[in-house]
Image 1 (cartoon, rainbow, N blue to C red):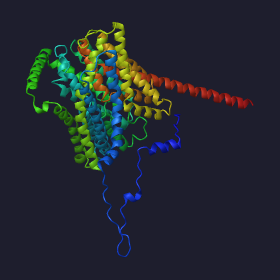
Image 2 (tube, rainbow, N blue to C red):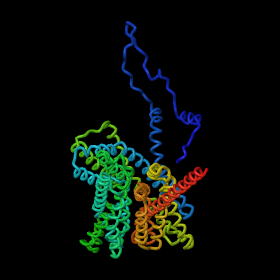
Image 3 (cartoon, rainbow, N blue to C red):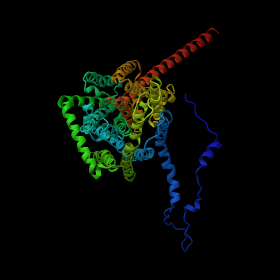
Image 4 (cartoon, rainbow, N blue to C red):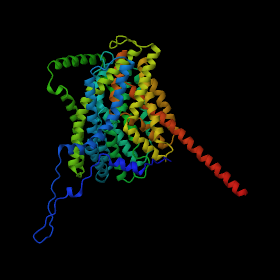
Length: 599
């Protein structure tokens, strides 16, 4: 059992008295008034008037708590990248003030977006989930879940990182990769959304029917792996595989997971199937990671079948010429920060309109305290716009710069005149260690991992401790990112990591119990937050460009399978240890009974 932490009463009183200010009751109440007969009569309570300093004092704990949640994820990573670049690579951070401003925008934007998500969007999901089964038949419920899955994909903060990554791809080297991330970027995101929508439908039906996750994993992964192997043998489509598997990691962010979960659990609870199940809340993240991969692979096959590479390269030249012409006389909406603001509005507002249409028109329901919800929606839209600005100038810029410079540790790059800085073996070791520490730090800073660890500890009655899960997932992600970087250095295909990894994962799935399968496969999704994804994507692409690789995708995919293997392996060890302790306890009990019987 988990040991309860104790605290001295004096320490508690001292902690609670910090930043508190006592106000006498008489200062809050007006002077009593009496009529001519001496009877007191009620009077309206005057509004409390507060000065600027008092308003700041009141809001400071509210804002600082939420800001620090984001700062704990961003600042250590940025400091690690900056110090590594300055000390190990002996190169100062270029445009440090612009990147610092961008990172500040990321923290402020995420703070506002997460608060807006909680106050503005989550109430929609909960109310819709609770009322849908009572007012619509199952087909209608699943159709709404499907549309919601598509809508939340467009609203994911990290999905913008894919579009930013598209501008780095060379159309001559990877024409299909270029077209999927540029002139067909909208279709790519739509296919990813269709995958998430399908996952939302299957996840909801699973909640209702109580299906096991194991067969769904095998059914969804089998065609995905087969298509990946077929693409591997095609000289052009093989460059798509890394992007397709990375898309699975991008979708399980802070919008998709809570909103789709709220809908699925709400539907299951309303149908009386969710409350008594220990599996509630698990599985959708896994499915929402696999189906988008399948969608992108299918799109790439369709594109390769219908459009030859020559046409894409010619189209890329037209896009480049148009971009150069536009950059000479750009429209206001093409300039920063308006371009990022428009992207933010385009991501959130359609989702809000869809949720509002379902709630107010189809279900004819109302939300209590609508002013708070409107405040939340405003925060979500404003936060997304600010985050997009920070993504461009902070995370993507820093990740691209660091990724491009790491190659200078063992090879010659233009940005470092003295490169290579170390011998080949030492330089590669430094690059691998850098990636491992980056993955470990980024994962431990994810708030969702802490929440998952607590859930698992409670679910297993302390047998699987929170620290064990966090350690296994962090080491798994760190190892995956390190393998992804080694893949770029030694220029081998991502399938050489994914195929053995998923084969081992599927074998461990067969051997594990349902609870550990749910936790293990969902653990990969909680680590791919809005900070980690853009940073790792940009770092991989910058690193790949510095090494002359065709594409730098695949690092996120490697970072997804390794924690699954790590958690499932640890789960088997925990199961073995629990059974051994039970067996020993049974032997002790039998010996005690034999001893008492002989006496």
